[in-house]
Length: 312
Image (cartoon, rainbow, N blue to C red):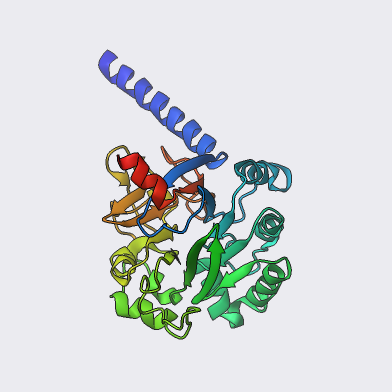
């Protein structure tokens, strides 16, 4: 009986500790730093910082999200990229919190925004959501944010020719217990009607000399297709870190119901390509995180010349 009593007390203590840790994690965030190198960054004149934000889901950190805004300002980024799901796509769910936060970012540096499945469902179902997506989109554009809806932006990033591709899949590709078949041709089809300044199509990333291609693709479930297509840097989110993370294994489950996804909340090098999947900044429906603190990602692009020096 004594052993059973001790085990019962231990179980209660562990459950209470886990509940406290879950509460702490869903109300906090961290800044995760990654160094990204590539032989294609030959034009980059200096180390360049990109902030990647994803899956805020209307989360507010402090009054008017001032804690999160201050963290963004302190990073002093050259560029901000948003990977979608900053709001919650539910009928009659206001997007004020997301918009109030995001609208302040262009005063810091240029901002590019690709949709996630929550923005996508609002866009695809106006009968259910009314003008919510149209109003949100107009508000983003009014404050100076470039929305990439299967669109490509070209910019000179501190001397580096760069293209930012915002990939937007239909909402049916996010269905529970379902994974659509995707390959590089599907990615090209979504982006193919946009052309680079050198009149190369989106079917051939990397064929413009010394151009660096960043792909914003919300759902990492189709990562093999993104890599086959040829992006130099793939930025995804959607999985919220897998809800619970196990050291050495990563996230446990995806929103589509698949266990132990290969990419769930980390940086991975695949040859000369880089994959970064954000654990996200918020949550919804299942408001659970364990060993999985929300994150703002700070990406340090390292010039190729500096890489060569470091290799000596």
